[in-house]
Figure 1 (tube, one colour):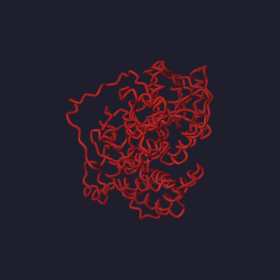
Figure 2 (cartoon, helix red, strand yellow):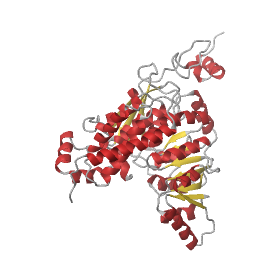
Figure 3 (tube, rainbow, N blue to C red):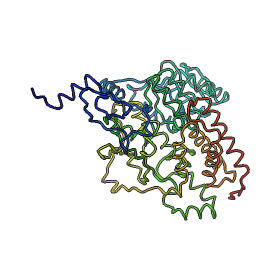
Length: 484
Protein backbone atom coordinates (compact mmCIF):
# COMPACT_ATOMS: atom_id res chain seq x y z
CA UNK A 1 0.00 0.00 0.00
CA UNK A 2 1.39 3.43 -0.97
CA UNK A 3 0.77 6.60 1.05
CA UNK A 4 1.33 10.25 0.15
CA UNK A 5 4.25 11.74 2.08
CA UNK A 6 2.10 14.57 3.52
CA UNK A 7 -0.26 11.97 5.00
CA UNK A 8 2.63 10.19 6.69
CA UNK A 9 4.02 13.45 8.07
CA UNK A 10 0.64 14.48 9.43
CA UNK A 11 0.15 11.14 11.11
CA UNK A 12 3.63 11.33 12.62
CA UNK A 13 2.98 14.86 13.95
CA UNK A 14 -0.25 13.77 15.61
CA UNK A 15 1.54 10.87 17.28
CA UNK A 16 4.90 12.40 18.17
CA UNK A 17 4.42 16.18 18.06
CA UNK A 18 6.76 18.68 16.44
CA UNK A 19 9.75 17.12 18.16
CA UNK A 20 9.54 14.15 15.78
CA UNK A 21 10.89 16.32 12.97
CA UNK A 22 13.72 18.16 14.71
CA UNK A 23 17.41 17.47 14.31
CA UNK A 24 19.25 15.05 16.64
CA UNK A 25 20.89 17.82 18.68
CA UNK A 26 17.93 20.19 18.80
CA UNK A 27 16.85 21.10 22.35
CA UNK A 28 13.23 20.20 21.52
CA UNK A 29 14.08 16.86 19.86
CA UNK A 30 11.82 13.89 20.46
CA UNK A 31 13.21 10.89 18.59
CA UNK A 32 10.65 9.22 16.35
CA UNK A 33 10.66 5.56 15.38
CA UNK A 34 10.68 6.51 11.70
CA UNK A 35 13.93 8.48 12.02
CA UNK A 36 12.52 11.33 9.92
CA UNK A 37 14.58 14.50 10.25
CA UNK A 38 12.83 17.36 8.46
CA UNK A 39 13.55 20.37 10.69
CA UNK A 40 17.01 21.81 11.21
CA UNK A 41 18.83 22.80 14.36
CA UNK A 42 18.67 26.50 15.23
CA UNK A 43 21.51 28.77 14.15
CA UNK A 44 23.90 29.26 11.25
CA UNK A 45 26.33 26.58 12.42
CA UNK A 46 23.64 23.90 12.59
CA UNK A 47 24.67 22.83 16.10
CA UNK A 48 22.43 24.96 18.31
CA UNK A 49 25.51 26.05 20.26
CA UNK A 50 24.91 29.22 22.26
CA UNK A 51 21.15 29.08 21.72
CA UNK A 52 18.72 29.05 24.65
CA UNK A 53 16.41 26.09 25.17
CA UNK A 54 13.68 28.32 26.64
CA UNK A 55 13.37 31.75 25.00
CA UNK A 56 11.01 34.10 26.80
CA UNK A 57 8.87 34.91 23.73
CA UNK A 58 6.49 32.18 22.51
CA UNK A 59 8.65 31.05 19.56
CA UNK A 60 10.93 28.25 18.40
CA UNK A 61 9.28 25.39 20.30
CA UNK A 62 6.52 22.84 19.95
CA UNK A 63 4.65 24.34 22.91
CA UNK A 64 4.75 27.87 21.44
CA UNK A 65 3.53 26.63 18.05
CA UNK A 66 0.53 24.97 19.68
CA UNK A 67 -0.14 28.02 21.86
CA UNK A 68 -0.06 30.37 18.86
CA UNK A 69 -2.50 28.18 16.94
CA UNK A 70 -4.86 27.92 19.91
CA UNK A 71 -4.87 31.68 20.46
CA UNK A 72 -5.35 32.39 16.75
CA UNK A 73 -8.45 30.21 16.58
CA UNK A 74 -10.16 32.20 19.33
CA UNK A 75 -10.86 35.01 16.87
CA UNK A 76 -10.56 38.78 17.17
CA UNK A 77 -13.55 39.24 19.50
CA UNK A 78 -11.26 38.83 22.51
CA UNK A 79 -11.14 41.27 25.41
CA UNK A 80 -7.99 41.89 27.45
CA UNK A 81 -7.73 43.72 30.73
CA UNK A 82 -4.61 45.86 30.98
CA UNK A 83 -2.38 47.16 33.72
CA UNK A 84 -0.35 49.99 32.20
CA UNK A 85 2.94 50.91 33.88
CA UNK A 86 4.23 54.28 32.72
CA UNK A 87 0.86 55.58 31.54
CA UNK A 88 1.87 59.23 31.10
CA UNK A 89 5.01 58.49 29.05
CA UNK A 90 5.21 57.91 25.30
CA UNK A 91 4.58 54.15 25.57
CA UNK A 92 1.67 54.70 27.93
CA UNK A 93 -0.11 57.40 25.98
CA UNK A 94 0.25 55.48 22.71
CA UNK A 95 -1.09 52.32 24.35
CA UNK A 96 -4.13 54.28 25.47
CA UNK A 97 -4.62 55.47 21.88
CA UNK A 98 -4.89 51.77 20.96
CA UNK A 99 -7.50 51.31 23.70
CA UNK A 100 -9.41 54.25 22.22
CA UNK A 101 -9.30 52.69 18.74
CA UNK A 102 -10.40 49.24 19.99
CA UNK A 103 -12.68 49.82 23.00
CA UNK A 104 -14.33 46.40 22.66
CA UNK A 105 -10.97 44.63 22.94
CA UNK A 106 -9.34 46.40 25.88
CA UNK A 107 -10.23 47.49 29.41
CA UNK A 108 -7.81 49.46 31.61
CA UNK A 109 -7.71 48.15 35.18
CA UNK A 110 -4.61 49.91 36.54
CA UNK A 111 -2.39 52.89 35.71
CA UNK A 112 0.97 53.89 37.15
CA UNK A 113 3.13 56.87 36.25
CA UNK A 114 5.73 59.36 37.49
CA UNK A 115 4.68 62.72 38.89
CA UNK A 116 2.38 64.07 36.17
CA UNK A 117 -0.75 64.19 38.34
CA UNK A 118 -2.67 66.39 35.89
CA UNK A 119 -2.35 63.96 32.97
CA UNK A 120 -2.97 60.99 35.26
CA UNK A 121 -6.19 62.66 36.42
CA UNK A 122 -7.35 63.00 32.82
CA UNK A 123 -6.57 59.32 32.21
CA UNK A 124 -8.36 58.21 35.38
CA UNK A 125 -11.50 60.14 34.50
CA UNK A 126 -11.50 58.71 30.97
CA UNK A 127 -10.55 55.04 31.56
CA UNK A 128 -11.80 54.60 35.13
CA UNK A 129 -9.10 52.22 36.42
CA UNK A 130 -9.37 50.47 39.78
CA UNK A 131 -5.83 51.51 40.78
CA UNK A 132 -3.87 54.69 39.99
CA UNK A 133 -0.29 55.02 41.24
CA UNK A 134 2.17 57.91 41.09
CA UNK A 135 5.83 58.08 42.03
CA UNK A 136 5.60 60.33 45.09
CA UNK A 137 3.11 60.89 47.91
CA UNK A 138 2.87 64.55 46.86
CA UNK A 139 1.84 63.61 43.33
CA UNK A 140 -0.66 61.08 44.67
CA UNK A 141 -2.18 63.73 46.91
CA UNK A 142 -2.39 66.15 43.99
CA UNK A 143 -4.20 63.50 41.97
CA UNK A 144 -6.76 63.07 44.75
CA UNK A 145 -7.33 66.82 44.91
CA UNK A 146 -7.85 67.13 41.15
CA UNK A 147 -10.34 64.24 41.07
CA UNK A 148 -12.26 65.60 44.05
CA UNK A 149 -12.40 69.07 42.53
CA UNK A 150 -13.83 67.53 39.36
CA UNK A 151 -16.49 65.71 41.43
CA UNK A 152 -15.30 62.42 39.99
CA UNK A 153 -17.44 59.72 41.58
CA UNK A 154 -15.50 56.59 40.54
CA UNK A 155 -12.41 57.21 42.64
CA UNK A 156 -9.72 54.53 42.16
CA UNK A 157 -7.42 53.28 44.88
CA UNK A 158 -4.64 55.86 44.78
CA UNK A 159 -1.16 54.77 45.83
CA UNK A 160 2.45 55.79 45.27
CA UNK A 161 6.08 54.72 45.11
CA UNK A 162 7.48 51.28 44.44
CA UNK A 163 4.64 49.64 46.37
CA UNK A 164 2.17 51.49 44.18
CA UNK A 165 3.78 50.19 41.01
CA UNK A 166 3.61 46.65 42.42
CA UNK A 167 -0.07 47.11 43.28
CA UNK A 168 -0.78 48.20 39.72
CA UNK A 169 1.23 45.35 38.21
CA UNK A 170 -0.41 42.69 40.35
CA UNK A 171 -4.06 43.81 40.29
CA UNK A 172 -6.05 40.61 40.20
CA UNK A 173 -8.39 41.49 37.32
CA UNK A 174 -5.72 42.36 34.71
CA UNK A 175 -4.43 39.60 32.45
CA UNK A 176 -1.76 41.66 30.62
CA UNK A 177 0.79 44.11 32.03
CA UNK A 178 2.27 46.72 29.68
CA UNK A 179 5.70 47.66 31.05
CA UNK A 180 6.35 51.19 29.80
CA UNK A 181 8.72 52.12 32.64
CA UNK A 182 12.23 53.16 31.57
CA UNK A 183 15.20 51.46 33.24
CA UNK A 184 15.70 48.72 35.81
CA UNK A 185 12.69 49.98 37.78
CA UNK A 186 10.51 47.70 35.65
CA UNK A 187 12.20 44.52 36.84
CA UNK A 188 10.44 43.88 40.17
CA UNK A 189 6.88 44.58 39.00
CA UNK A 190 7.44 42.38 35.95
CA UNK A 191 8.59 39.50 38.13
CA UNK A 192 5.60 39.82 40.45
CA UNK A 193 3.21 39.95 37.49
CA UNK A 194 4.78 36.80 36.02
CA UNK A 195 4.26 34.99 39.32
CA UNK A 196 0.55 35.73 38.96
CA UNK A 197 0.64 34.29 35.42
CA UNK A 198 -0.02 37.60 33.68
CA UNK A 199 1.20 38.11 30.13
CA UNK A 200 3.82 40.84 29.69
CA UNK A 201 3.74 43.37 26.84
CA UNK A 202 7.41 44.20 27.16
CA UNK A 203 8.32 47.80 26.36
CA UNK A 204 11.01 47.90 29.08
CA UNK A 205 14.08 46.30 27.49
CA UNK A 206 16.12 46.44 30.72
CA UNK A 207 13.86 43.74 32.20
CA UNK A 208 15.56 41.09 30.08
CA UNK A 209 18.92 42.80 29.67
CA UNK A 210 19.49 42.93 33.42
CA UNK A 211 17.14 40.19 34.55
CA UNK A 212 17.25 37.65 31.73
CA UNK A 213 18.95 34.94 33.84
CA UNK A 214 16.05 35.20 36.32
CA UNK A 215 13.16 36.13 33.99
CA UNK A 216 13.53 33.41 31.35
CA UNK A 217 13.23 30.47 33.77
CA UNK A 218 10.22 32.15 35.39
CA UNK A 219 8.45 32.63 32.05
CA UNK A 220 8.86 28.90 31.39
CA UNK A 221 7.80 27.96 34.93
CA UNK A 222 4.61 30.05 35.00
CA UNK A 223 3.70 29.58 31.34
CA UNK A 224 3.20 33.25 30.52
CA UNK A 225 3.65 35.03 27.19
CA UNK A 226 6.47 37.59 26.98
CA UNK A 227 5.40 39.76 24.04
CA UNK A 228 7.84 42.38 22.71
CA UNK A 229 6.43 45.89 22.34
CA UNK A 230 9.42 47.70 20.83
CA UNK A 231 9.69 47.99 17.06
CA UNK A 232 12.73 45.78 16.42
CA UNK A 233 11.78 42.82 18.58
CA UNK A 234 8.16 43.02 17.56
CA UNK A 235 9.33 42.82 13.94
CA UNK A 236 11.35 39.69 14.69
CA UNK A 237 8.47 38.20 16.64
CA UNK A 238 6.05 38.86 13.78
CA UNK A 239 8.44 37.33 11.25
CA UNK A 240 8.77 34.20 13.39
CA UNK A 241 5.04 33.46 13.36
CA UNK A 242 4.79 30.10 11.57
CA UNK A 243 8.55 29.39 11.58
CA UNK A 244 8.94 25.86 12.99
CA UNK A 245 11.34 24.88 15.79
CA UNK A 246 14.87 24.89 14.44
CA UNK A 247 13.86 26.97 11.42
CA UNK A 248 15.56 30.18 12.60
CA UNK A 249 19.10 30.69 11.34
CA UNK A 250 19.87 34.33 12.12
CA UNK A 251 18.35 37.52 13.58
CA UNK A 252 19.09 40.85 11.90
CA UNK A 253 18.36 43.98 13.93
CA UNK A 254 18.01 47.24 12.03
CA UNK A 255 19.22 50.55 13.46
CA UNK A 256 18.48 54.09 12.37
CA UNK A 257 22.09 55.03 13.11
CA UNK A 258 21.07 57.70 15.61
CA UNK A 259 22.00 61.36 15.66
CA UNK A 260 25.52 60.88 14.26
CA UNK A 261 24.80 58.40 11.45
CA UNK A 262 25.78 60.94 8.75
CA UNK A 263 29.05 61.85 10.48
CA UNK A 264 32.23 59.97 9.68
CA UNK A 265 34.18 58.56 12.59
CA UNK A 266 36.77 61.29 12.19
CA UNK A 267 34.14 64.03 12.05
CA UNK A 268 32.44 62.79 15.20
CA UNK A 269 35.67 62.48 17.17
CA UNK A 270 36.79 65.96 16.03
CA UNK A 271 33.43 67.44 17.02
CA UNK A 272 33.67 65.77 20.44
CA UNK A 273 36.99 67.50 21.02
CA UNK A 274 36.24 70.91 19.53
CA UNK A 275 32.54 71.49 20.18
CA UNK A 276 31.18 69.30 23.01
CA UNK A 277 28.14 71.57 23.43
CA UNK A 278 27.07 70.88 19.85
CA UNK A 279 27.63 67.15 20.43
CA UNK A 280 25.40 67.24 23.48
CA UNK A 281 22.61 69.03 21.63
CA UNK A 282 22.88 66.68 18.65
CA UNK A 283 23.04 63.51 20.76
CA UNK A 284 19.72 64.22 22.42
CA UNK A 285 17.79 64.66 19.15
CA UNK A 286 16.68 61.60 17.15
CA UNK A 287 16.40 61.86 13.34
CA UNK A 288 13.43 59.48 12.93
CA UNK A 289 11.66 58.59 16.16
CA UNK A 290 9.95 60.65 18.85
CA UNK A 291 11.34 58.96 21.97
CA UNK A 292 12.29 59.76 25.54
CA UNK A 293 15.57 61.51 26.36
CA UNK A 294 17.34 58.42 27.70
CA UNK A 295 16.55 56.25 24.67
CA UNK A 296 17.41 59.05 22.25
CA UNK A 297 20.91 59.32 23.75
CA UNK A 298 21.24 55.52 23.72
CA UNK A 299 20.49 55.70 20.01
CA UNK A 300 23.24 58.29 19.49
CA UNK A 301 25.81 56.02 21.18
CA UNK A 302 24.14 52.97 19.57
CA UNK A 303 24.03 51.36 22.99
CA UNK A 304 20.33 50.95 22.36
CA UNK A 305 21.16 48.49 19.58
CA UNK A 306 23.68 46.69 21.77
CA UNK A 307 21.04 46.35 24.48
CA UNK A 308 18.60 45.06 21.86
CA UNK A 309 21.09 42.35 20.89
CA UNK A 310 21.02 41.08 24.48
CA UNK A 311 17.24 41.34 24.60
CA UNK A 312 16.95 39.41 21.33
CA UNK A 313 19.09 36.64 22.81
CA UNK A 314 16.73 36.19 25.75
CA UNK A 315 13.51 36.74 23.78
CA UNK A 316 14.21 34.45 20.84
CA UNK A 317 17.00 32.21 22.11
CA UNK A 318 19.47 33.15 19.37
CA UNK A 319 23.18 32.89 20.08
CA UNK A 320 25.14 36.14 19.98
CA UNK A 321 27.02 34.90 16.92
CA UNK A 322 23.68 34.68 15.11
CA UNK A 323 22.46 38.21 15.90
CA UNK A 324 23.61 40.91 13.50
CA UNK A 325 23.09 44.68 13.28
CA UNK A 326 22.58 46.68 10.08
CA UNK A 327 22.07 50.45 9.83
CA UNK A 328 18.88 51.33 7.95
CA UNK A 329 18.45 55.14 7.88
CA UNK A 330 14.82 55.16 6.71
CA UNK A 331 13.57 53.11 9.73
CA UNK A 332 11.00 51.30 7.57
CA UNK A 333 12.37 47.76 7.81
CA UNK A 334 12.13 47.25 11.56
CA UNK A 335 14.15 44.02 11.65
CA UNK A 336 14.55 40.71 9.83
CA UNK A 337 15.01 37.00 10.36
CA UNK A 338 16.89 34.54 8.19
CA UNK A 339 15.62 30.97 8.09
CA UNK A 340 17.61 27.81 7.50
CA UNK A 341 16.98 27.89 3.75
CA UNK A 342 18.53 31.42 3.74
CA UNK A 343 15.18 33.07 3.05
CA UNK A 344 15.03 36.47 4.73
CA UNK A 345 11.75 37.80 6.11
CA UNK A 346 11.30 41.41 7.18
CA UNK A 347 8.54 43.43 8.85
CA UNK A 348 7.99 46.87 7.36
CA UNK A 349 5.99 49.86 8.51
CA UNK A 350 6.13 53.57 9.18
CA UNK A 351 8.14 54.72 12.21
CA UNK A 352 5.11 54.51 14.50
CA UNK A 353 5.45 52.93 17.94
CA UNK A 354 1.75 52.08 17.99
CA UNK A 355 2.33 49.30 15.45
CA UNK A 356 4.49 47.08 17.71
CA UNK A 357 2.42 48.07 20.73
CA UNK A 358 -0.85 46.93 19.21
CA UNK A 359 0.61 43.53 18.29
CA UNK A 360 2.00 43.05 21.81
CA UNK A 361 -1.45 43.44 23.35
CA UNK A 362 -3.42 41.65 20.61
CA UNK A 363 -1.10 38.76 19.61
CA UNK A 364 -1.64 36.66 17.60
CA UNK A 365 -4.64 38.56 16.26
CA UNK A 366 -4.57 41.36 13.70
CA UNK A 367 -6.86 44.21 14.68
CA UNK A 368 -8.09 46.71 12.14
CA UNK A 369 -6.38 50.03 12.98
CA UNK A 370 -6.92 53.55 11.58
CA UNK A 371 -3.28 54.09 10.60
CA UNK A 372 -1.75 55.26 7.33
CA UNK A 373 -0.87 52.24 5.15
CA UNK A 374 2.74 51.86 4.03
CA UNK A 375 3.46 53.17 0.51
CA UNK A 376 6.77 51.86 -0.83
CA UNK A 377 6.50 53.97 -3.99
CA UNK A 378 6.28 57.06 -1.79
CA UNK A 379 9.51 56.02 -0.09
CA UNK A 380 11.38 55.40 -3.33
CA UNK A 381 14.35 53.55 -1.84
CA UNK A 382 15.58 51.68 1.22
CA UNK A 383 19.29 51.60 2.12
CA UNK A 384 21.41 49.50 4.47
CA UNK A 385 24.90 49.99 5.89
CA UNK A 386 27.30 48.22 8.22
CA UNK A 387 27.72 49.98 11.57
CA UNK A 388 31.16 51.44 12.32
CA UNK A 389 32.10 49.67 15.55
CA UNK A 390 35.05 51.98 16.21
CA UNK A 391 32.73 54.96 15.96
CA UNK A 392 30.23 53.17 18.22
CA UNK A 393 32.23 51.21 20.85
CA UNK A 394 29.07 50.55 22.88
CA UNK A 395 28.03 47.90 20.36
CA UNK A 396 31.02 45.67 21.11
CA UNK A 397 30.69 46.32 24.85
CA UNK A 398 27.15 44.95 24.69
CA UNK A 399 28.15 41.86 22.68
CA UNK A 400 30.98 41.23 25.14
CA UNK A 401 28.70 41.53 28.17
CA UNK A 402 26.10 39.29 26.55
CA UNK A 403 28.60 36.55 25.80
CA UNK A 404 29.91 36.71 29.38
CA UNK A 405 26.33 36.38 30.58
CA UNK A 406 25.19 36.21 34.19
CA UNK A 407 25.46 39.45 36.11
CA UNK A 408 27.62 41.19 33.49
CA UNK A 409 24.63 42.40 31.46
CA UNK A 410 23.11 43.97 34.58
CA UNK A 411 26.38 45.86 35.15
CA UNK A 412 26.46 46.98 31.51
CA UNK A 413 22.88 48.21 31.68
CA UNK A 414 23.21 50.03 35.02
CA UNK A 415 26.52 51.65 34.08
CA UNK A 416 24.99 52.84 30.83
CA UNK A 417 21.91 54.25 32.56
CA UNK A 418 24.06 56.12 35.06
CA UNK A 419 26.49 57.48 32.44
CA UNK A 420 23.58 58.41 30.17
CA UNK A 421 21.95 60.36 32.99
CA UNK A 422 25.20 62.11 33.90
CA UNK A 423 25.73 63.22 30.30
CA UNK A 424 22.19 64.60 30.03
CA UNK A 425 22.57 66.39 33.38
CA UNK A 426 25.25 68.60 31.78
CA UNK A 427 27.83 68.18 34.52
CA UNK A 428 30.80 68.16 32.13
CA UNK A 429 30.79 64.50 31.06
CA UNK A 430 31.92 64.11 27.45
CA UNK A 431 30.14 61.97 24.84
CA UNK A 432 32.97 59.43 24.56
CA UNK A 433 33.19 59.22 28.35
CA UNK A 434 30.00 57.16 28.26
CA UNK A 435 31.60 54.01 26.76
CA UNK A 436 34.73 54.56 28.87
CA UNK A 437 32.71 54.44 32.09
CA UNK A 438 30.77 51.37 30.96
CA UNK A 439 33.94 49.53 29.96
CA UNK A 440 35.54 50.43 33.27
CA UNK A 441 32.59 49.05 35.22
CA UNK A 442 32.63 45.81 33.23
CA UNK A 443 36.36 45.37 33.73
CA UNK A 444 36.09 45.99 37.47
CA UNK A 445 33.16 43.57 37.75
CA UNK A 446 35.15 40.65 36.34
CA UNK A 447 36.47 39.94 39.83
CA UNK A 448 32.93 39.32 41.14
CA UNK A 449 31.22 38.18 37.95
CA UNK A 450 28.56 35.52 38.61
CA UNK A 451 27.26 33.26 35.84
CA UNK A 452 25.47 30.35 37.50
CA UNK A 453 22.67 30.54 40.04
CA UNK A 454 22.04 34.25 39.49
CA UNK A 455 19.24 35.58 41.70
CA UNK A 456 17.18 38.76 41.69
CA UNK A 457 19.19 39.91 44.71
CA UNK A 458 22.41 39.48 42.70
CA UNK A 459 21.05 41.54 39.83
CA UNK A 460 19.84 44.35 42.08
CA UNK A 461 23.10 44.33 44.05
CA UNK A 462 25.32 44.67 40.98
CA UNK A 463 22.93 47.16 39.41
CA UNK A 464 23.47 49.41 42.43
CA UNK A 465 27.20 48.68 42.45
CA UNK A 466 27.58 49.72 38.80
CA UNK A 467 25.72 52.98 39.39
CA UNK A 468 27.96 53.78 42.35
CA UNK A 469 31.01 52.98 40.21
CA UNK A 470 29.93 55.45 37.53
CA UNK A 471 29.16 58.10 40.14
CA UNK A 472 32.64 57.75 41.66
CA UNK A 473 34.60 57.47 38.42
CA UNK A 474 32.80 60.29 36.67
CA UNK A 475 33.66 62.56 39.60
CA UNK A 476 37.32 61.60 39.18
CA UNK A 477 37.35 62.40 35.46
CA UNK A 478 38.76 65.70 34.31
CA UNK A 479 35.77 68.01 34.05
CA UNK A 480 35.72 70.19 31.01
CA UNK A 481 32.64 72.30 31.68
CA UNK A 482 30.67 72.86 28.50
CA UNK A 483 30.00 76.61 28.25
CA UNK A 484 26.97 78.16 26.63
